[in-house]
Length: 425
Image: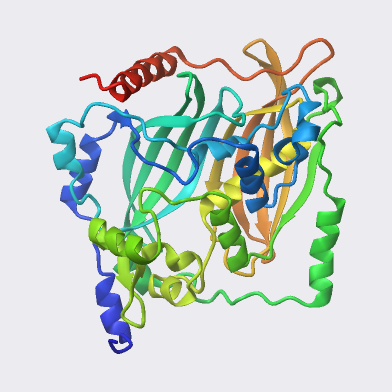
C-alpha cells in the first residue's frame, strides 16, 4: 500500500494544460457530425426506468411515474421527462470516422477538467416506454476565454440530435462545456471563502413548507387564455444538496458515458482505456476525476471549497418545475439555461419564475417564461428561459416541427445503421 500523497505530489498529478495545438485541432472539428456509438446505462425506455429517472431528480409528476394515471391523459400512457433523452442512448452503427478526424481527436484536451455550464434544448416528440433512442453528434462551436477562476479556458458547445427507432427526431440537446486547466483552478481559490451551510430544525421546516405547498398541475388544465404576462410560476425547493442526491441521480440512469465509471475488473479495464480520467486520491488509489461531485478533498484540490452537483441535475430540476406548472396538456418546446454558480453540498435551491410573453409560434399558442434558481446565500445559480405550448378550447398544444435538415440526416443515418445491422458493407 503506497503512502498518503503529499499535497504537492497530488497537485503535480493534476497538472494539465490547455495547449494551442489542442485548440487548433478542436476548432477543425467544428461542424463534423457522426453517429454516437455510446452504449448508455439506459438504451430503451421502460415504465420502470422512466419512473426511476424522474424520482432520481425528485420529480413525482404522475405523468412520468404512474401508468394508470398516465393512460387517462392525452398521451395515453407514461412519457419520459424530456431531458431523459439526454441519458438514453443505444449505439448507432455508421461508417468509420475519416483519418483526419481520428488524428485531430487523439488525446485532445487530455486530463483537462470539464464542467457543464449550461444547455439549450428543443423537443419535437415524446418518449414512450418501448422507444429506443439513438443519436448523432458533433461540436457546434468553440471559443477560448480567460477567466479569473480558471485562467485559460475553452467554451465548447456540443450538439446531440436524439433519434428514435423510427428515425424520428425526438430532441436536440446542445451542451455548453467549460474546459479549464486543473493546476490554475487549484491555485486561484476564488471560492475558498465559502463555508459549508448548516441547518437548524427550523430551517429544515421552512424548506419542507415550500415542498408541501408545491402543486403538481397534472390533470388541472392550464389554458393559454388564463395566463397573463407577469404571472408567477410558483415556488419550488430543491435541497439541501447531499451526496445521496448525487447517488440517486446516478441510480436513476445517469451513466456519465463515455467515461463509464465502474467497479472492480471493469474499472481496471477502464483505467487502461482512459488513464487520464483516473487521478490518484490522497491514498495513492487511482479514482475517477468526476469524484469532485462527492469527494470534498478532490474538489478542494482543484480549487473548490467542497463537492458540488452536476449541472445536468439542476437542468432536470428546471424541467420538473416547468412541467409541474404547464400541466399534462402543456408541452415544453424549448429551454435555454445558464449555470452561473456552483451548487455545493448543503446548498438549497429555491426556483421561481414568471410569464414574460404570450404569442403565436408555428400556428399555436405559446408562452415565454423566465426562471431563476437562488441559493440560501441569495446568489443566482441558474438563469433560464423557456417556451411552452399551452392548449386553448378546441386547439390542443403540439410539439414543434422538425427542421428539414435534421429530419433528412436522421433518416439517412438510421438507414445506414439498419443496413450495417443486417451485415451490409
